[in-house]
Amino acid sequence: MIIGLPKEIKNNEFRVGLTPGAVSAFVQAGHQVLVERAAGTGSGFSDREYQEAGAHIRDSAGDVWSESDLIVKVKEPVESEYRYFRRDQILYTYLHLAADGPLTRALLDSGVKAIAYETIVGRNGGLPCLAPMSEIAGRMAVQEGAKYLEKTYGGRGILLSGVPGVERGNVVILGGGNVGTNACKIATGMGANVTVLDVNGQRLAYLDDIFPRQITTLYATRDNIRRALAQADLVIGAVLLPGRATPKLVLREDLALMRPGAVVVDVAVDQGGCIATSHPTTHDAPTFVVDGILHYCVANMPGAVARTSTMALVNATLPYGLELAAQGVEGACRADRGLLAGLNCYGGHCTCSGVAEALNLKYVDPTGLF
Image 1 (cartoon, rainbow, N blue to C red):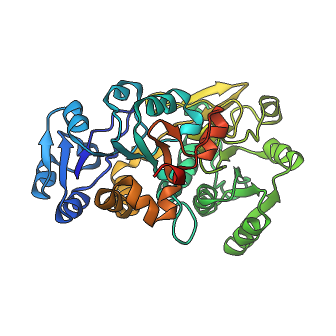
Image 2 (tube, rainbow, N blue to C red):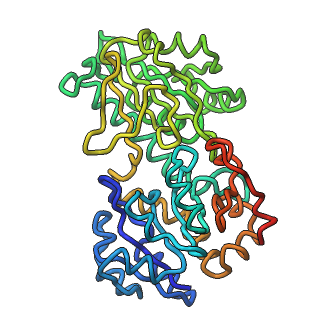
Image 3 (cartoon, rainbow, N blue to C red):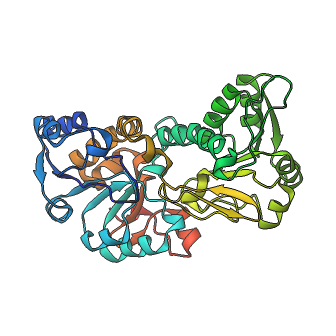
């Protein structure tokens, strides 16, 4: 199979879908790999490294897309890339389709076989291709939130750790999954007061065990959320419903409960966000203010730490990529039900129930298609 690696063109996206080591793994398995020139430079990988790994360099994205059977990316294609889609081509990347109707329609119209990293289920459960980016985004959320709390960035002028004789900052984390847990690690490490809200009692018990006496856990009722917001300096949206649009846990009127200059970091924004006033931003213009509350809603946060993110991501995605290259979508999905859960579009059909529900599309069970 011919594997294509185009350069990412989303705003300030420096990650790349394959490392030279991953290219070598595909080549050793008998596949050909085409890499767009300079695709890996943002992550510190040169064209020469890819060539030494066995890749062939192409001068344009169009060449890579047109010649390849399997396209490996990081972020969902942007509108200028839709023209490259073609029937029976395999697209393997993050997609987040529940919050992106135009991309979903373009994929369905083209007949692309689209596998979304974020809905692949591991053999022991969990979301193995989403987990490493969730870990990074959770850690970055506190780091970025702490920065934007500084008065020079428009925040309240709060140091999360406090100092002797001065109270610590208050961090509220909505969701106790991978993002929330990693946000907890950094926030508690900084010395902040941390409150985590979730609807999963077992998850709250787990967090209480691993952060003893360092955090407060609350069941995510409407009343508890509003009371937590009133005390918050930094709110981190860390809610995930795999493949589905994120529920809005903080409404616009709730912002009036918060202190002017408080900061919201909505990590869930690529699935629609759990803060009603969120909308995707870029690293070029990462923040905006609504009702006195500073919002940070960058949809590709891990792209800012591209080398770390690329290596962590490829560690998770490479095994599935090799399965797809060896067996095609049909064979690989028949052999691995978790990979089948990652199939979002196939031959013009929406094959992810969460996407279909969010966008009011007809869902088609993929097991009946091949």
